[in-house]
Image 1 (cartoon, rainbow, N blue to C red):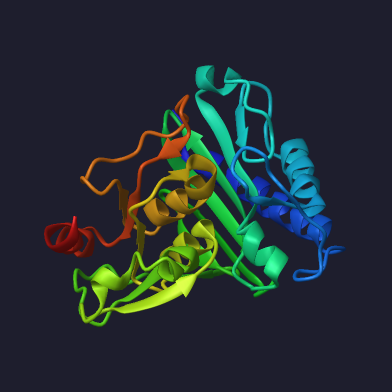
Image 2 (image 1 turned 135 degrees about the vertical axis):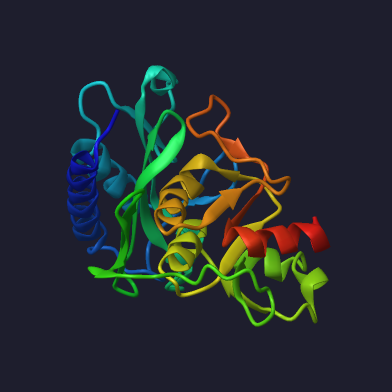
Length: 261
């Protein structure tokens, strides 16, 4: 069993790794960086993604801890580990390439399938969100207290910028909440955990590395993350793809499911 004192060490490791990763990405200029297309999914890849991946892998896992990263070949050895680091070196690489300040470095620590400690850093906006279950969440070192009300009316809901472009959020027109387009999945989750928005969701598949760090922050903030059917994700699965997710106050998500899912 992990004790709260151990969480302090985990948080310190994440904090240090995020700051070192920020130094690794600093030589690259968002909006003016060379990139190539990944063969398997057609997503952009930059040298910055790989540089940050190397820093995080060097600083985070210790003996007996597993590793899953978007930019590292998955050998599934992690499946036998109780503690697994799940990271996205740059979540929102497309925004990074386009110079849109909606990308971040995301780190999540999963124990027995549950996200328990997480951190995201957006160097473009200078926002660092850290949190652990039992410790709460901080934004740039200041404790935050997210809204846990169940009201959809007037809520600020962060939406995938690409999903909005494709018209997938048109169904919510006139629903009474504000839809705010944003890039990185992890950055959206971090903002909700930090109390900068009430909720975020997607009804299209994402990967564990997109979600794990933010999921830990959501749980640390006393909020809820689930699939659209209400079930909770068990992380560190052989198939790293999630079909969908909803994140925010439990009551708000229940109202969303009742109306649209």
